[in-house]
Length: 214
Ligand SMILES: [Fe+2]
Ligand SMILES: [Fe+2]
Image 1 (cartoon, rainbow, N blue to C red):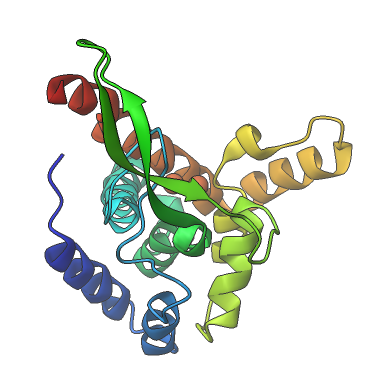
Image 2 (cartoon, helix red, strand yellow; image 1 turned 180 degrees about the vertical axis):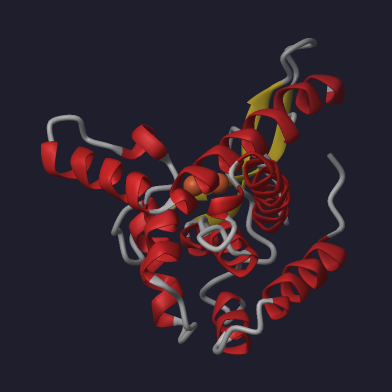
């Protein structure tokens, strides 16, 4: 997947501004303040969109999936239209992974070519959790609050629980129940969980892209 960082940045900002939410400009500044590198960060090191600009592209992919899922759900369940309002879908989907904006450090490392065995240097990233090691969804929710954005409880919960059970310590009955109650109470939580899975697993064909490079 080729990335157009400039176009993706413009689309991300336009979508956020379309919500008319107070604090959007403060949020954009915060995401790009030098310590946070949201618009150039990858989405992962070895999985989906592991390249510069991958994080903003992934966030847009999740937003596109979530908006389409929203339409599908409302067609079947018109009573959910108000709860799944478009602004909340945009805010939660675009911000669910902002916690990754400061953890990837670009680096080069030695690697053996998988086919010819020759040593080569590849551009990759080290992962450093030392800046606010809070945990994935929790950190995104808190960063959204810190930025000064006017954000609702259901948007915060959808961001917090977007990883579904992948981010859940099963020895904690409290956390398991909290996630289930959040999903029952706010349909936005389920929508963002599904959209994140669809984007990462079906829109972002990382493994096949890499195979074609060699
Ligand atoms: Fe995530
Ligand atoms: Fe994600």
